[in-house]
Image 1: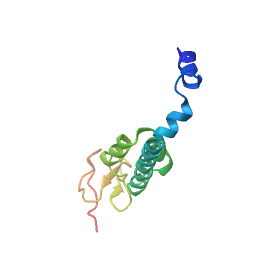
Image 2 (image 1 turned 30 degrees about the vertical axis):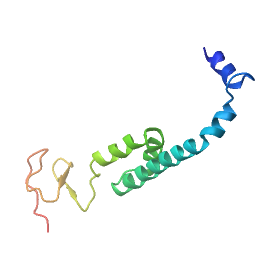
Image 3 (image 1 turned 180 degrees about the horizontal axis):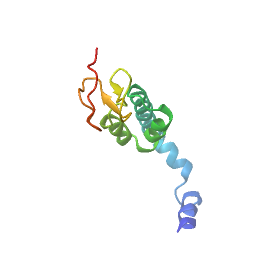
Length: 111
């Protein structure tokens, strides 16, 4: 099967791969450019949400709009500005919380 397809692409009497690229080159380049834009946007948004850029860029290259949607759906990682560590169980809790949701320990009020 694979040899047949390759022989069609490169045979002298059948369609030629170079002819196909020259006829559809604008479409291919536009599609690749849009896909690259999805990858860059995915990496930028992931970085803003506290995640690593490189893995999300690669996901954006392979999955395009699906990776962009995934990075929007995922919540931002906890930061010291939004969370504090429970003194009893060492789990992260929101700064506004009065009681740790993991162990029930009373938390000091945020100042």
